[in-house]
Image (cartoon, rainbow, N blue to C red):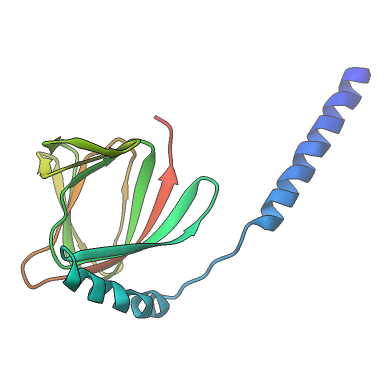
Length: 160
């Protein structure tokens, strides 16, 4: 009987703690129009930089959200601990998924960048499309000359 009471008490404390945790989480809502309006300054930054710009919108315990704009292709990437989920808001791009990162270099813990991705499969992306790239998967976003793409990113912590 003592074990049952202990388990009930532990369960009640866990549920209570989860409730407090859930209450401290912020609810976020963005419309496509709001995100595209917010992305206008990213376009300006991209022109001054290497053709791409992004910003982190919110951070949560096991994921975070970003807004990104590209008018040039990016290099190869591999995130060892985070999956990427892209929601294409505007424009057109091709994502290469799989294969291997060419000339890989570790740029931060769990983050590998390179010149490109060799091999892999290609998927055309347009406004309204969603793509999930699992952690540990090489990928590269390609943008054709004269094109641009704006996308919302959810980076989800994953363990392999």
